[in-house]
Image 1 (tube, helix red, strand yellow):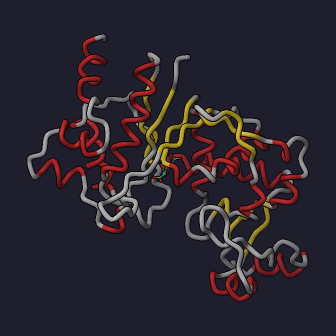
Image 2 (cartoon, rainbow, N blue to C red; image 1 turned 120 degrees about the horizontal axis):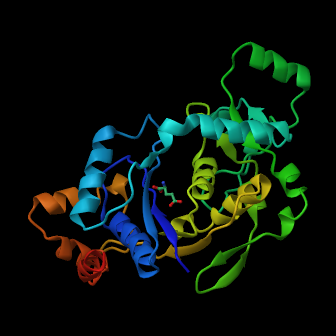
Length: 292
Ligand code: GLU
């Protein structure tokens, strides 16, 4: 099967070896099937994303021998697309405005439940807000997020029996209810990762999503959104995360060594690929380039 894969980084820091492993997995799956590898920049959070990180990620990936069709989709340029999805969901009664602050949520939650991705499950305070009070808050311009009404979403035909296909494992049962009423549009950013990623995978015809194991649990939620919106379901392959010498997963925030730093220090692409656990990548690039 000819695959369309993608690497979809959020440019909130420089790429590290974990990103390299992820990008190479997507590129490899596309090339081996004679398909297409896409690069997508997930930069909706303009408070954390920076243009220099975007420029550097292009440079890093090209240095590693990757190529992709232009123009690259930058999510921040497509906020209208996400707005339309939100309007559709709202029109079907699946969203509600949530005025809570983090503190309100902590207080209302008492002993908070956590979703599989570690986020706190919303205790539902604003879900059943009296219509008059909601209208007054909206009229007063109170900031709000938009949450998915999970119970209603799960009431849609077929929503309770969804599965996703994990390559090598087969059908995986989905339990999106573990996430509760997730935020689909934030107060400060008028869309959310879950919404944009599923919309764009559908729009771009992605057939195989290759990404880190840390996003595996969220796939249940992504399947639910695909089901609600009648978007096709790609197959998924979640790869293990790279860890440092102490067994902690590599993360930008912990100052994991960046590809840029390794490049500047004189390491070769081959050495960086070795470190990312993909020692045969450079020879794969040569044969892919040679076969075109
Ligand atoms: N933008 C996400 C991140 O950088 C990845 C999205 C995905 O692969 O589904 O963590």
